Amino acid sequence: MYRNRTCGELTIADVNKQVTLAGWVARVRKMGGMTFVDLRDRYGITQLSFNQEVNHDLFEQVNKLGREWVVQVIGTVAERSSKNMNIPTGEIEIIVSELTVLNASKTPPFTIETETDGGDDIRMKYRYLDLRRDAVRKNLELRHKMAFETRRYLDERGFLEVETPVLIASTPEGARDFIVPSRMNPGEFYALPQSPQLFKQLLMVSGFDRYFQIVKCFRDEDLRADRQPEFTQIDCEMSFVDQEDVLNMFEGLTKHLFKAIKGVEIPDFERMSYTDAMKLYGSDKPDTRFEMKFVELKDLTEDRDFVVFDSAEYVGAICATGCASYTRKQVDELTDFVKRPQIGAKGLIYVRYSEDSSLKSSVDKFFSEDDLRKWAERCNAKPGDLLLILPGETEKAQKQLCELRLEMGARLGLRDKNIYKCLWVTDFPLLEKDEELNRFFAKHHPFTSPKAEDIDMLDTNPAAVRASAYDMIINGVEIGGGSIRIHNSELQKKMFSVLGFSDERAEEQFGFLMDAFQYGAPPHGGIAFGLDRFVSIFAGLDSIRDCIAFPKNNSGRDVMIDAPAKVEKEQLDELGISSKPTN
Ligand code: ASP
Image (cartoon, rainbow, N blue to C red):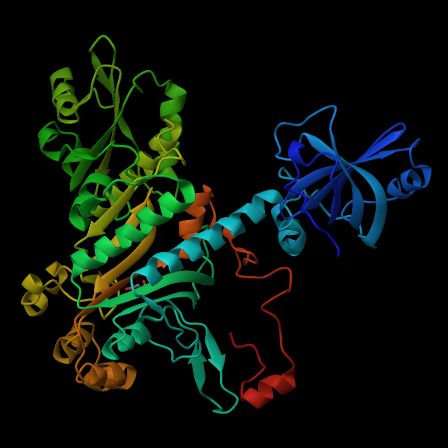
């Protein structure tokens, strides 16, 4: 038997017991005639104690151990004289009587501690060592629990987990596909699924009724902190449901996860239409942990010969509570922030509402104190507050103001990771126009149903048609999204034509779906959650990388196994692919 107890479980109640432990040498502390070893396994750390006078040979042996050696010890649990109350095993130590080295280790390239000295690159190259660190391992434990509780909740409600294929066909909509050549069908390619969307809808036609799958999906997109080329979805679909049924079911799932895993009771979710989200927060995924809603001032700024406002389609303000005392330097920092190329504002206009109730602004030349007071009133500002104002073309200015709002929220400590605000954003537009290509794209995907009351506008004013689509937002992060689907082949055909598909192309790409819809497709709808994002919100992480065992870096590379990699020419020949790089 390699061990009968783990390194995380022994306490004062175990004193005098004989135990066998196995694990990694985290630390060796030599203190004259005593040597202490921190032995680590997945469950924790236990201190081992060696006394030169009691057992000289063992003492010699332990002093030769290096970091990360794998050892087995037999010994007796004893109460420690100097206790460490920060860890569960901190009151005891093991007086070792036998030590076996199970394996030696090279010195690891970074320290395997919560606060490591290893930079990102080196930790990714030696990810298997990084995963020995408490901090990273905890995230994977959390991930397991979330997946497990998700399965429990859905299983209890009659959902079946069904696997769908990974080698499928490329579709033109959505993000870029990863393509896989087929040796048996030279010149033809599979694609890896961006989501199991079509298959889960076909399962509804098959009568499966309630489906889910915790499933890898693939998108060949440029990477950001919350994106990976392969990521995991909790993918779900239900039949005979309307939007309300889906929202209730998955609001329930989210509440269950918070309760079961974090012990947090989440109240009923706020609901907000897409239009309101854009108007009040400049974003379809607003962070509602704090207010600071947008206030429109355009009508109050007219006829004062201030061309910046006069020529702007939109003038929006936010009120930063208690910030009237900001120094020149702080205001300049904010101005620099909005002028960064990623944000792109030309400048920032501010109004200080001083404690003595006087108002001063960066546009005093054009506006009287009375004017400013009207703005302040509309913003519900109080003495001591600072108004920050951005003018411009509506959509652009709202986006910029959104960034500024988030920055102010962060500066004012209003984005506390331990507070969770969950929200449904609903009534998204069905379509999005690409002005350059002069065509519509589906905002969600082409299978999303228009709202029944808007269907007539598909011909007359497609841009105004709203979708039965919804996103779940937690703390400003899009955790999930879905829709009620089209289940009528005629309407689906119509949708493809609005999206600029010829009949032939629609038939070629999605003929099987429209066929299926002619064999008794039930009304259905669903949702998919990004498990990686969900876990990182629960873990309070800024990046989804740390809750993935073996993530890719920012260039989509796995630096540990060195993928992607070149393949042999013969392999390419067999696939009928030219090995010459094309430019
Ligand atoms: N398949 C969709 C997505 O991946 C989600 C859904 O509509 O269920 O975004």
